[in-house]
Length: 261
Image (tube, rainbow, N blue to C red; front, side, top):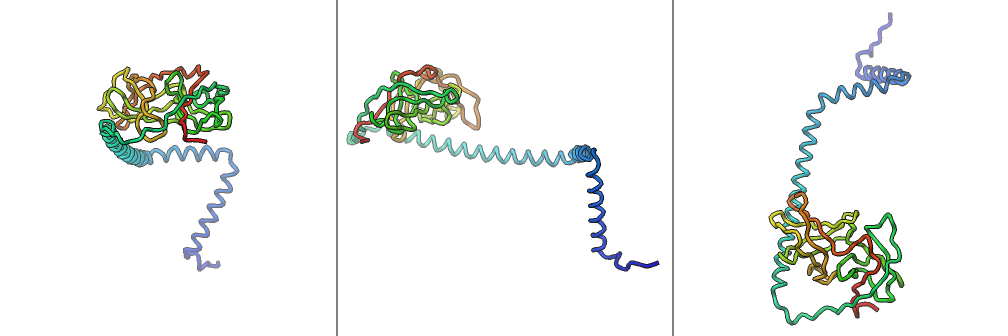
């Protein structure tokens, strides 16, 4: 009988194991119940793995929660500092500051509104010929309804206040608290970034804030409604808009004089 001297070699063992594995794999592909067997093994092995998996998911969730809370607290602190700075600016008398260019109103009719973007955008029949430019506020009976986001020679597209793509800084007139209003794409408007210790009352009035130069301050936006659920240290409020966004036929664009050719 011949004796294979290399049978004790690790390379020989590895080669035999690979061949045996390939043979088993080839055999398993011939059976229709192979997938069911694999699924059964997966279910069985998931039982002892569950504690470690649950512990890992819990650790990841805690880490994400702490990171998000840290970001929100930093944002709140920044908003509080801006709020204090704006309050000081509003109380100071600055007689040497030159007034902004006086705006005027351009009346425009709504000539296009797509059903799938009913609460996001509409088009009006006034454009650069009438002095309309990107960023101009759009009003309805003196109340803010949106902002011009695209303009042509004889038309302009308006992003509505009910769109989630439009965020407008506002101030609560009764308390001078700052926040941001944003639409929900379903016809509603929400006031965001209000700390939970600032309890606003229903009926308080909202107007555009003195932040940046996009909107003139003091344009009426709406009134505060009931508070929402506190999330990450902030409490949202519903907003009762001053205009009926489902029936907009004519609007007024607040155009600045002397700024554009």
